[in-house]
Image 1: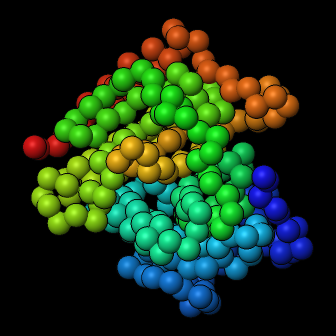
Image 2 (image 1 turned 30 degrees about the vertical axis):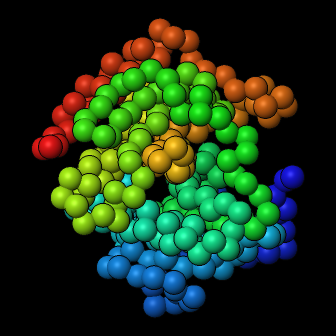
Length: 268
């Protein structure tokens, strides 16, 4: 079954990706309504524009800085944002009011996002299982790096293609008080940031201006899938056929990405 998009609910929705110069509603924190939770600059609230039927749509504002992003945060802010986001996502899952709960981030004009201000979305699906079309193979591939229980690979059977990075951690560590869990939760966030920086600055000659970041709970692991966004392949649009880069290209990306990940320091 397809998710039903109600275009009337999108009327008046701000879009500074396509209409730059328009006022940003996320900068006007005093004007925000229906706030669910707040921790410093991080704000989780109901989405004003409920465009999908049979869902609960929420937005997580990451920062007060309009021009910031996961790729630019200093370590303390990065770790805080990721812990807050994972906690809000889990809170919505634990409510048991939805068949599935999705968390993802759009960034850039080709990502499907409408606002530049750094934010994620957490969406509860009342009728749909967002994992139905996924397989474990979509999260396996070329092993790039592992430190402790945090691992990174490049998909050889991507969901859409052409290049997808999977960052994996034990599920639940972001909410744990255990010292090792806390250190690895921060390392998980660091590895995601490295992956996103690689996607924007080095992969395909640094020509990507947009990315998506998706989060999943699978097999006791939390997996973040990061990918550059281009114009979608007609093979995927017309036939749901994913494409993946040639093995030689993936191997080159793996070596270059590994070099960046190896600069991350974690003490067991």
